[in-house]
Length: 218
Image 1 (cartoon, rainbow, N blue to C red):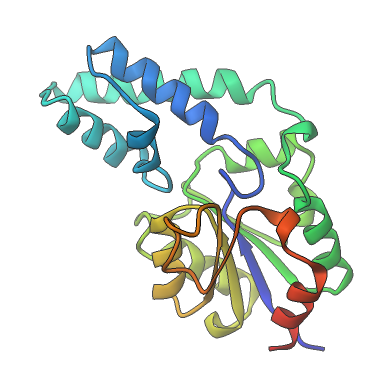
Image 2 (image 1 turned 30 degrees about the horizontal axis):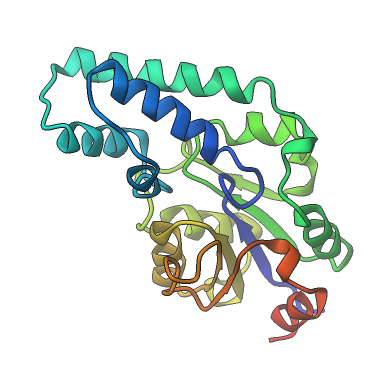
C-alpha cells in the first residue's frame, strides 16, 4: 500500500479561527492607538505571536517596554481564547471531514502542523482530535514558518519521508515552509496570494476525491 503523509495546517484550513485572530489583534492594536486592517491581518497569517506583535508595533511606529510587550501578548491570547472557547464542530470548514474520512479509510498518515499553541484544544472543541495520528503545534517547535521545522517534525512522527508528504496551507509562510521541506504544497485560498504552491484550491469543496487518490498514487 502507498502510505503518504497528509499534513494539515489548522487556522484557515480545518477551521476558520483566522477571524478570531483578526478581532483579537484589532482590539489589541486599537488599545494602543494603532489602526489595524484586514490587509495587515493577512500578513500575520502563519506568523508567531511575538513576530505579529512586532509587526503591529512597527506599523504604528510604537516602542513599548518588554513588560508591556509580554502583557499585550497575553491580552491578545486571552481575547482569542474567549472566542475559541465557544467553538464546536459547526466551525469545521466545508468538506474538510470528507477529505479526512477518505484518508482515514485509505489508511494514510494524517498529521497536524500548526503554529497555534491552542491547536489541541481547538481540535477537541470541534471533535476532530481522534483523526490525527500526529500533532505538532506551536508548543513543539522553536522556529516558526517559513522555517520547515513544524512539517519536518510531523513527517518524522508519522514515520514518512518528506518527499512522500503533502501539506495543506492557507498562508504564504506555510507554503514556503512546505516547499523548503521538499513536500508537495497545496494552497487553500487565493491563487494570486498562494502562487508558490504546487496546487491551489479556494477550499476543500473544489477538491475532488480523484485528486486525493492521485496524490496517494504518485
